[in-house]
Structures are given as C-alpha cells and as structure tokens.
Length: 125
Image 1 (cartoon, one colour):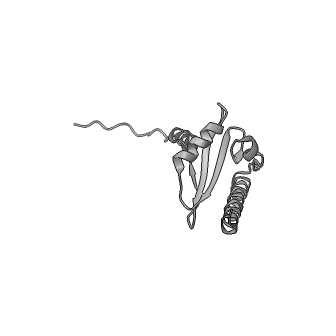
Image 2 (cartoon, rainbow, N blue to C red):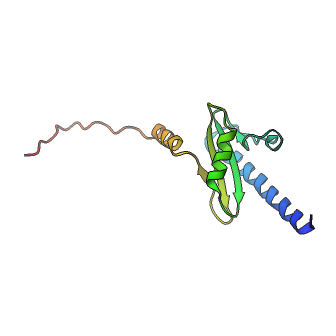
Image 3 (cartoon, rainbow, N blue to C red):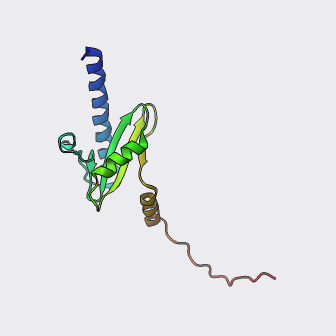
C-alpha cells in the first residue's frame, strides 16, 4: 500500500478514536455515566461504547451513511439494548441517530403531562 494511503488511514483511525473518547467524556461530564470505549470491538464486534441498555456506534466521517450505521449498531444490540449512532461530519457538530420509536420513548420520559385546567369548561353556543 502506498505511504500516502497508509497515512490517511492512520489519520482517519486516530480521528475516529478521538471522537469515541470525546463521546465518552460527554457521557461522563454531562450525564455522570461511567462510560468506557469498547477497545475489543474490532476483534469481537459490538458497539464502540456499550452501556447497560444502550449500544453507541461512533462515526467520524466526511459524509454520513446513517441507515447503514444504524443497521450495523442494531445488529450489535442484545434484545434489551437500544441502538444509537453518534456521528460528526467534517466541520459539523456531532449528531445522534436513533430509531424514532426510541426517541419518542426518551422524549416521553422527559416531558411532564400538562396540568389539568382548573377552570370550568365553556360551552359553545
């Protein structure tokens, strides 16, 4: 393999590893989760970061192939786990990609139901 391609591959791998470390730090700093990178995932398969009920696949690329990555992450999940892909394109912010049903569940857990109105309903007419 030409040296140029080897150095590009090393840079890409280094950028991906740094992105995984950034996500682990965010999980620790923002949520207090003691997350760790799955360093054996290349050999044993599985996600980049595995939490009890979540598998996180980190992608640092120039362009995003979201559906392929989500399918890859879903294939790594145990039945009780939910897939999340974290990706960042060059020059862009990191994004999380997860199935819509999972997002709705998360959102539903965060939103409190509205207080019932104490006023008597008004009748039209």
